[in-house]
Length: 594
Image 1: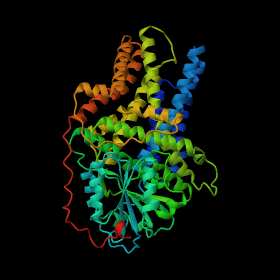
Image 2: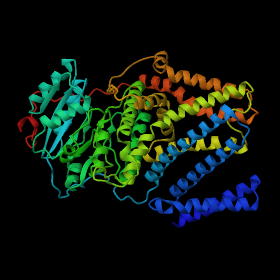
Image 3: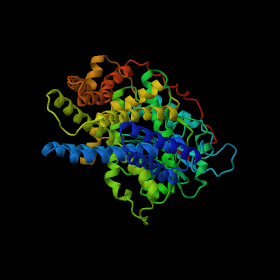
Image 4: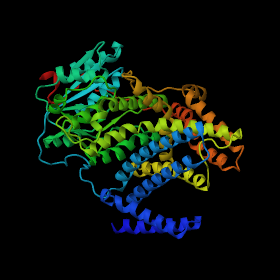
């Protein structure tokens, strides 16, 4: 509190001095100082868990957003714009409001994750070793689709080594067409007494297969259901640390981070790994404080009673895990995120596979928003909707954040139009420019990027270079995410795109071809910068060129990321499955022996 108030005083003084240098009169300088102080003090009750830096970052950023939006509305309405130009300026201002909402959603998450000094619900590694707690019977479901048999068997072998005395394994193969892929897994499972089922032409994608496992193959004794993807290597302590958490009667699900192995084999793999790590190191802990964590599928456990009470897995949504967690929380169950990682999977080996994964996640997120948006409105709790305001904000903000990429594309097109207008001496197009705008807009954009890089670095331990690379990986997939966010609004269903695990080789030409849209956008950006620089002494020209640099760089990095992934070192060979004479531990209750 003391540091926050002291920092507020210093910032208010700095703002007053800056405004007086800019030419403001004594009354306006005093009003500026008062505004900074009030903006900080108002937020103190809501940020009491944070350190002073996080509080000041949040309060001053929100103030800057508000001041900028008010300022721009005033200038747009009182400028010389008329007709279509005025309409374009107002549309741009409306987009900036949406950008401000998205920016504050990101910023709250960042400040909460890296600025919190006290956590109410955070759990580092589940139940500590040696703690006396009941061990519920767990049914581990392993869905597989078109996966290499050696990889699936290696995952099952790691499950055999779990340090837990009450569990079963159920393997469910979902519509794998090539019998040579699923038949060796079936034989291996039968020889070890593990339940296996192959589905042929079965509807519902992954969630349809999980419903079969739940309703037809699960041991009646099972109190907890676990989901483990077919490419994961599991830490022996996974169930020992996480399953006893269900001694809490209202706990509906537990989610531990999805982690990955061999992530340091190349620069691209390192940066991709950091981009994945951000969600579990920054987003999930923040959401967990409001009991708004997401069930992310693999490496998660669900109370069977809770899963049955909401009707099992919904088969219409391609992100069935996140959709399930929202229904569980809405029904009154709680969720818990555990910081420690207990499983290590395989990352996509190509940038194109990563883009397909991002498309699926975004499309599924928009599906959830389309179906459940009424549940996220700030109405009082009801019997059929027990979500708190914090939970609703967690899921609403997480859903609308997918539209950040679409917004970035629209802004990019506005900038290109502005650059062409500058080159053609078109005069005023959307808004008036001044020293304030020339300084404020690039500074706000640059600060946003630097803040994102800093949070990735602090939240994941990445180097500055890898943090920047992780941010560019996100940005370079923005076209795919933007398309998914639009398609999710107009299409009820999309094909479940499996994330390929195989390596692909290629040249720069193939990388450009596979990312042709991003390459064309990058070339358009370079052309826009050139057009804007034809009037470099004009504030409109220099400002437009500066604002085009970062998005152009992001689009250009798409084929470069693709090339880097294709030229990366191949992943190590999966562990060799045990010999056919190996015997499973007798302490484990297997699905085939129920």
